[in-house]
Image 1 (cartoon, rainbow, N blue to C red):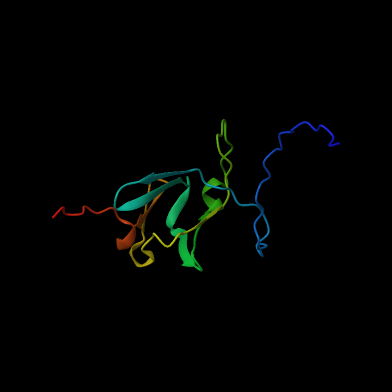
Image 2 (image 1 turned 135 degrees about the vertical axis):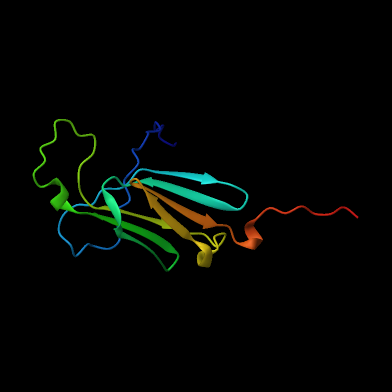
Length: 132
């Protein structure tokens, strides 16, 4: 006869990075919103304090990586009265499906907000079919 066992809810576990960093210290995960249109995905990330010269966006092995560094010299003599975010580098990565046109990805940074545009590949875009 089978024992009666109650179902238990398990907590989700955080996925740990597969690779280890060679630079000491911690990085922060920038908050992101992802929007979809018929033509593309738009990824909008908050990266306060990051300038264009300190931002790297790269694609390797179907993984889109974003890294933004902070110039700590700008904060040297500042003592915050109130702070809603910690100052430090940002890092985030996204695995891309084959529905993204990798050659047409673009990025823009304005006022600490990074916008990535990931155009859909032609085969992934919706199309109308003529009725004959």
